[in-house]
Image 1 (tube, helix red, strand yellow):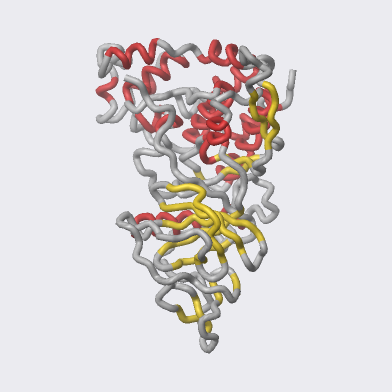
Image 2: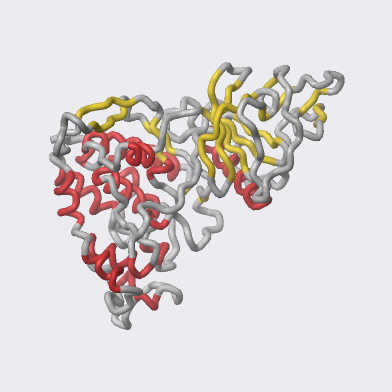
Length: 421
């Protein structure tokens, strides 16, 4: 059985840093409505209109004189229906569709007031996605409130509005995600120096979130964006024909962390399953409860992927996933396996050993696990220098016991980031 490289992709978006949050910890909004001044009224199309001004309108983020398009029904899934070149509110001209996912669509737009390109995340007209978008907005406000200079690497909301029953989040248009860059580069891995730069920035952003008692819960290369789209084209010296094949290198290593729709305050309710499969920590699979360390496991998986060009754990099934973890990292400690909840205890024998390969769903699953290699050997195959330091860092991030896993601040002090030998 052959697995996909990755789970289904979701359109991603980035956030600007010009909005400030409310005092204190964000609370989920109980009312979802227009983010406008109280004296404004609204036409059927959802654009705000000041009394006495006629069709010229004031939208969520400012004023302009362009017109909104005629009203259209949403598609069968609740997505906003649009045509290129028309407006979403009178302020924003739609230039292209940048992405699409379960939440809605991401549109590249021209901001007439700011004279700038922006990305707008247009949420589906489905109540659960509207509710989730409002919670994400509250989280973004908290992040922005404590980072007025934008130096923490968490992209922040520029403004939001409700347009024709679609929550819209306006943000900067930045570069591709690290996953998209890998894919367009034929999954060639990044150099260890770039991995170091990416890892340092990612850990700084996550440490900032953890200080605010926020857990991201969905860290992966799709949610890490390059600030710039510019790249260099260089000969691919690892190719058998280096003069005919080329690789791409980003001109800038600056990144921003995005997608806070699944972020959770430590004090709030924790759902049982978090994180995209490939980056899901063992404590989540085993039902042991999760907290800040689940982000650190995800970071470990991300750094391996950036070094190798491939997701570390390419699987869609829990027992196989755990078997892959043991193949790469060694046996799961009994103090972890014996605490598995009722749903997960079936993956282990009474002695707390993984029920593998006896419990495998197929021979191909057994072969897929057998093909995997130990973490040290995997890194040594792809990293030409600093391999020892990187392996030591990864071993600290990929501890089975979340209590023994490196914290973000501890990882930032690791010699991998200071000793460049």
